[in-house]
Structures are given as C-alpha cells and as structure tokens.
Image 1: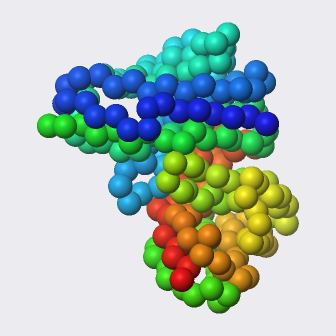
Image 2: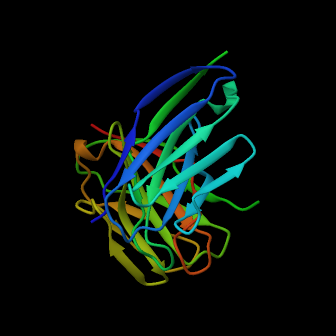
Length: 113
Length: 114
C-alpha cells in the first residue's frame, strides 16, 4: 500500500520568511496530492491540491510542487504570517473513485512574530 | 453553512463502557470516513462509507463499529472502549462528486478512556 513520509515534523520560521514542507510517496499509481491545514482545536482544512499532470500550482502565498519521477511533492509558503501557524498534512491517493487517501504524519509550523 | 458536525467535543469514559460519537454532514456527500489522530502518527483511517448501507474497514478498525443508515449520519461506536483508544477523532465527508477528494472535516472529538 501507499506510504507517505513528511518532513520536518516541526518547523519554526520568522514572520516574513518562507517555509517548505516536503513529502515523499511510495505508490507510483498515486496521482492526487492534497494538503490540509489544521489550526489549533479545529479539524484539517484543504488548502491546496495538485494532480500528477501538473508540476506546480499556486494560490496566493501558497504553492505546491510535484516531482513524479522522484515521487516527492512540497508545500511552499512565502511571506509567512502568524496565522500560518498550524499543523500541515500532506496526502496522496489515486485520482478518482474512492481509492484510499494516505496522510503524512504532519508538520507543526510556528511563525515567530 | 456547509459543515460536518461531531458530538461530543470532549468525552471522558471508563474502560468497557459503550459509547457513540455522532457525525452529521449537511452537504449531501456520499462519502464519509472516520480518522483518529495520534502524535507522530498523523491521521489514520478507521472506517469509511461510500454510501448508505455501504461501509468498509480502514487501516485501524479493531475495536470500532460504524453504521450508515442515512446519508447524512455516520456514527462511530466503541462497544468496549480501552485505554489505547484514547485519541483525537475526526469525521470527514468527501465533496468531489463520487470521490473522496476534497475532504471536509469536523472539529474533532477528544476521547479519553480511563
């Protein structure tokens, strides 16, 4: 089955700096890669996703890159703000249908004002 | 407002006392799922349901039961809770048509089994 590894487990950055979270996956059939943000006391919320036919996707200060050959994908947050402090989860699955979603172990991001 | 509602938010119980955590979604989603979140282990799937009366095991189903009698509700049942089921539980529903992509999560249920 799919195995998703996520690094680092914790990350501290100064406000305004960039943050990068990296994930690797094992199943070459996976082609849908979402990222979820979990704020303190809340459930995870989808913030961005990418499919394997796209190498990069941006949404304002957030971007995700995908390298299918190397089986890794990354979340990039630029100009970090205190409200970006949260736990971030990457995930992978085969696109379409109800194939299993496999989550990474999470990265706790702290943005220091 | 589109949402997934879990109750209770916090629950403290004792070993062996049956409990139910309720989950309801108002988005007419076919797919619903339960996850548990433990430090260092991320989100692990307990059970999922692709539609009414269709349920299947996830990665960690032991000690749990579910039912899907109505499209909007997907309760999680612990018949005889044990301390190793102390965890943070999340219910989710899938918003992307007939897939489990773009999941909506509830706010979580923190369960402590003494």
